[in-house]
Image (tube, rainbow, N blue to C red; front, side):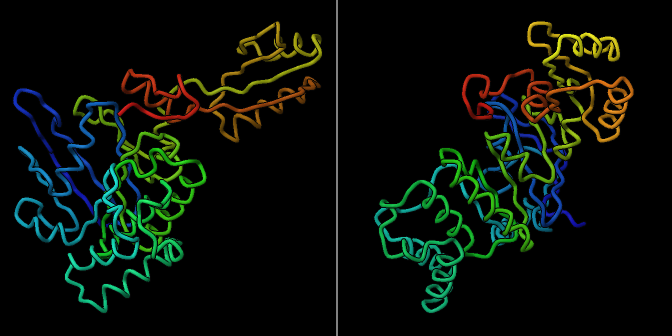
Length: 319
């Protein structure tokens, strides 16, 4: 598979502060790549460099097959950027916002209107199209923002925290739009504070901390880096609980709740083996749940920083 983005030895400093310390990235065409990291890790700086907004101090960078240093205009023609903050003009209608973007791409009057109407339909904004954008909900503004990014038909899209602040329904709608873009051959470079978002969408994830990549792989590969997987067995009978503790000597017991926590990687093979041991001992369990490490666990393990979901209901990292 060809690389949409290929980075070798990327470095960037601001004065004496080293922000990016020689990172390497490879993003395959037609995939979703997510860059995670705590506040000050260098995520935004990396996106700004790859989208030609600022220059790197060192490194070899190719975007859409073009050398970023030698061919910045060719790179800009191949990419789209949806920033963390909306670029929508609230005084214009949704359709006028899209036509304005089409004019910036010099599409011509007729093509600009055709493209605007096509994107309004694609993003379920036909009814909202004649209304001023200041009347839109947060989810509608974000959909319009992404639609504006697509006016130029980019091959690579940089999405900087595209669903922050959206309600769950709007967030899931945005996820579906992103999946549809990738199914159509677009490559997405995603930064997000919401670890569930990376888990749901990303083909590859890289974790950046203090300017260095500290972990990289698929979501499942990253989760396997972290110990702590277990199976939770709950009993209602004290006799069954006691017998299970004898049959499963590695289990951690909770005598008050009659629960055993059995170390387990959650694989089908390991689960089948555990059930076979319980069946051989004629053990009756009332509740069985499987816990495998999630991206929150990975984030804490590789950066040494907890994610904010420990204090809120939502799984997010601090930016």
